[in-house]
Amino acid sequence: MAENYTVIGRTATTDSPGGDVVRDVVRVTVQTKPSGVVFEFNQPRGAALNASIAARAHTYSDDIESIMQTPEVSGVQYVQDVNPSDNIVDYLQIWVTASNDNGDATDYFYQSFATLEAAAVAPKIMTLYNSLLATLNL
Image 1 (spheres, one colour):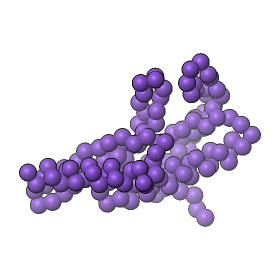
Image 2: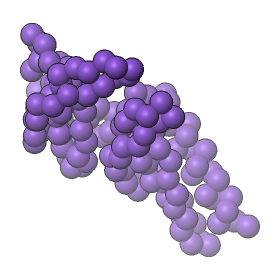
Image 3: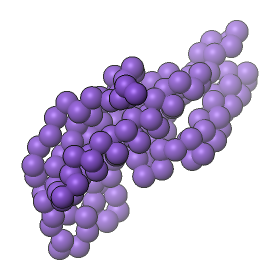
Image 4: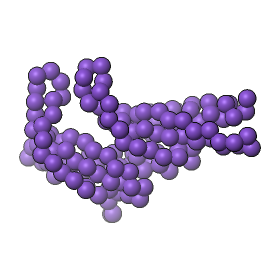
């Protein structure tokens, strides 16, 4: 079975999952197939490092490619932000476009990588899409 991603970079570094804890990690850069979306994640170093990287890369790529196949989605972009606890959080910026005889309308929302599965994302896509259609129909 062909993979749905390519690992395009690996860098040894450290991160802090919270508090004063610092851990050794590998920062992995991945590109999905066929859409070419590039994203990153930190994988704690351990005995099963390569298998852990492959499992996470595959899961995230499946989720991203599924989102990209949604007709209402016009694009996605990987972004990071700092949460109220001063931790860096990975997000997928999801662009939604609605079109009708009155024109086009586009907007986006951020979805945490922790909840990229379809059950969490699909309702948000449709809510934004319907809101954009309502705006076009004013």
